[in-house]
Amino acid sequence: MKTHEQQRFDFLYEQLLTNLTLQDKRPATIDAYSRHVRRISAYFYCCADKLLTTNLKSYFADLIASHSCCTVKLDRNVLQFFY
Image (cartoon, rainbow, N blue to C red):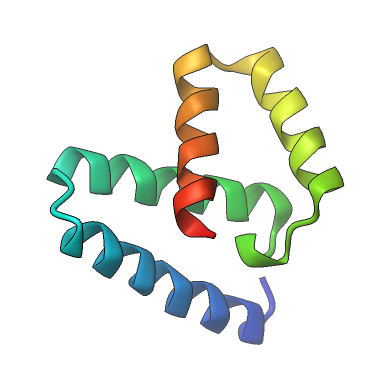
């Protein structure tokens, strides 16, 4: 990621962790959500808040082909929480 993209991601990532903690999510949930949002951002090489519907459709099509239903659902839940 470019420097400004990385800074934006870091800021949003910290907000995500704070919000998960404030909602009293379990440490395992926080770990899973944080891991998945990092994977999504790494897949596109940009911050997840910049993604378009077409990006997400292609991402989930690839994910469905290579991962379990649980992983797909977790990624969907992470994005819903992130936004």
